Structure formats: C-alpha cells, structure tokens
Image (cartoon, rainbow, N blue to C red; front, side):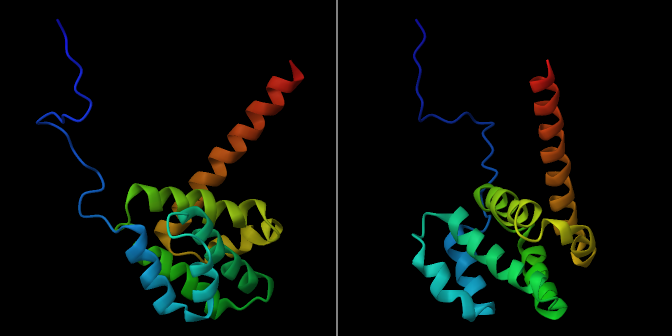
Length: 146
C-alpha cells in the first residue's frame, strides 16, 4: 500500500528560494533608496508584493512621462542590482507587476525607446515578457478567428 506524505521532501529536493532575498528585505532596500515612495509602498499590505511592486512601477512610469532619464536609470539600476538576488515570488512580481505596468500602461507607446535605457538583465526580462505577451495576443486572435 502507498502512503502519501505531502510534507516529506526527497533527498533530491532543491529549494530554489534558499538564500534568496525575500520581499520584506527587497522593499526595505527599495524605500531606503527611494524614500519618496515609502508611504505608497507601506500603504499596501506587506504580503501584497505585486501591489507593492506596482507602486514602484507607478513611480518609474512617472519618470518615463517626464523624461527624467536620471531617475529612470536609478529605478532600472535598482531592479537590475536585485535580479540575481530575489526569490521566485519577487521575480514574478518584477515581471508581472513592474514590466507589465510599463508594457501595457500609460507609457506603452514610449517603451521602444525606454527599453534601451534598461540594463542588460532587466531588459532581457522585459523583452522576454513582451514576446510572451505578444504570443498570447496572437494566439487569442487566431482562436477568435476560428
């Protein structure tokens, strides 16, 4: 007879988030570097990492709108400096909440120019998400035509 033990990890279990930065540390560092958005970040529940990441996206988008390249690069460099350090939940929030806000939001028509200001790793994340999103849109169009 087989017994299922959901809490038992095999000897080959690999925790991909082991030693990776968690949301509390990420947002602590974020508000240290960007104290002007501290209140907006802290208005969101600490478990709502996607909403907190969107608040940083909003801040970034404001600097895209005003063509503030210096502050925009600071935002992008902050994200770049954390990409290899963050856990999978934060990486998902970076892609889905940060990148998507720019890709589909109020500055979507400016992103072709803006993406060139991004450092390498962030640019790759953004472009991979953009390609994934465009593929989904195309697939949906084909489905609707059938």
